[in-house]
Amino acid sequence: MPDPSVPPLTLVLLPAEYAVCRYAQVPPLPHSTGLVSLTRTDDETSLVCPVGDVPTGATLVEPGWAAMRVAGQLDFALVGILAKLAGTLADAGVSIFAISTYDTDYLLVRTAQLELAVGSLRQAGCRVM
Image (cartoon, rainbow, N blue to C red; front, side):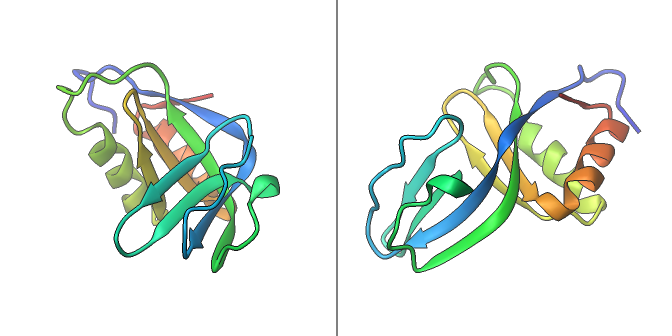
């Protein structure tokens, strides 16, 4: 049930289908519109991008993800935004792949669970566009 003291979050559903990929080394970044996220650690390099723009050379490719962006810029002082969204989806049995940028957060859910995810977020008081 929505908490009336917390303003509703708005999430914007991105139009593309996304893939989550693993690479042995940093791949060339695709020239995509929309979300492209590259993360490199000592152990792995991960890339999220539209499924049609996956660069060659991936050791693993997991297509079939839908992406939602939290609308607006989130101040670093805000607490619990991602936890609220993740908790709502976990309660519904929806797994997520989360990405944070300087300005906002992105949630990726399996396209097979998109309808359930959107319904659960709306029931929790979020707007999904």
